[in-house]
Image 1 (tube, rainbow, N blue to C red):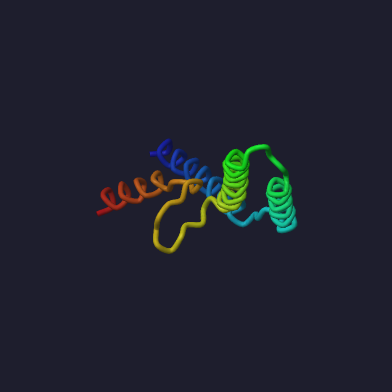
Image 2 (image 1 turned 45 degrees about the vertical axis):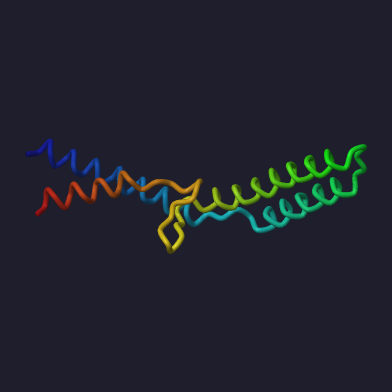
Length: 115
């Protein structure tokens, strides 16, 4: 009985540490000036690409479009990664969200064992 109790206390302590760490990660935001700097730099690079002269118009459209898509995607990804524990209200998990399946499975096991 004593070893089970100490094991339960250890596991509770580990869970508290993990939840505290997840809470800190959730509440820590990327610096808003960092977002502003990133967006300004992205717009500046896209603007410079648009005024750059290329020999072929089709190549310039493809190149500018491709590089613009990469930069816009990276800005969106950085914003999404900054909030890994915030899920949309519709319940859809985005690409950079952390899956909560261990907690969901633990809850289901606990309900089965306690009922």
